[in-house]
Amino acid sequence: MLKMAVLLSGSGRTLDNFHERIQEGSLAGEIQVVISNVAGVLGLKKAEKYGYPAFHAADNAAINEILLGYDVDIVCLAGYLKLYTPPAELARAVINIHPSLIPSFCGDGFYGHHVHDAVKRRGCTVTGCTVHFADKNYDEGPIILQKCVEIVYEDDADTIAGKVFAIECVAFPEAINRVDQLGIEFFWKRVEL
Image (cartoon, rainbow, N blue to C red; front, side, top):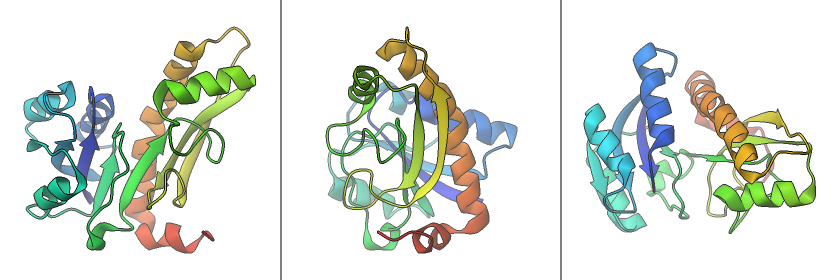
């Protein structure tokens, strides 16, 4: 069972998913703390409603200061829209989900609808999501899990976003479960970066 910190920037839809799966026993994690870089967002209100300690912290230093007070195995970036630099002891333990199949449509500036618009403009017939460990560069850490969805020609960016988020709700918990089973270092050792 992994002890999780959840970082978010908005509505907390991924936090909802984590909470529901923890409650039903299908996610091998326990949320210790929720932190947002944006004050007053819905995700923080949801965290409080669920009974998780919830904080606003504007930058990496403030986030890391809060994390000192909690026993955390992994940090999950759940719609967190900034590059996060963890404390040294968590440097290889930050997990992110990206709304495309890395290495396509990723890197600085590719988040949310920017990704789905680019996928639509390129005429892709599949897209998906990638759960990966985060490092000092956007979307470059070891991949834990990828899942695909089909796109039909008529899909617009909003439809694509809906399909991808639905598969993210499956992929992120599954990836956390794999990390719990195999350990963090397994994923760092299996790739060449």
